[in-house]
Length: 140
Image (cartoon, one colour):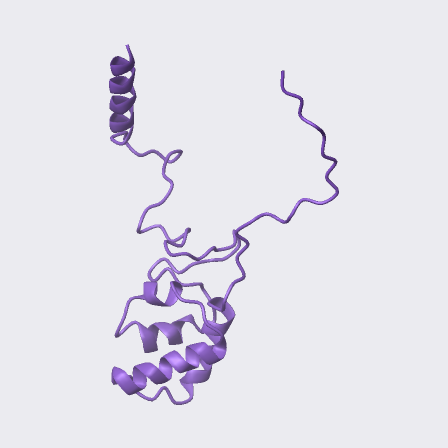
């Protein structure tokens, strides 16, 4: 009896992975940038560029021009630094990977990165409970 139940449960799990995808059961597609595939949480109102997956902004074109020639935009969206942190990354790329001098465009790139990919405070636990009235649990 137990073996039969385990077999049916296992078979159900395997078969459910082969369901055709419909709009109601699609959770994420690598080409759908309405969700960010990295550990970044986008707000419901954040508009993402379909080509790059980066946040749409007036300086996005400059980031695309200066950054995507060497690496994927996923490297950008996966990181969150302060303005100084992004500037240090640029300096590191210039020193170690032959990144060119960004000149006047560096301000636009840093403005974009600081605005859209700054560190985010994540809450991983609920707030502590307050004003709890405990009671004695009486076991029979």
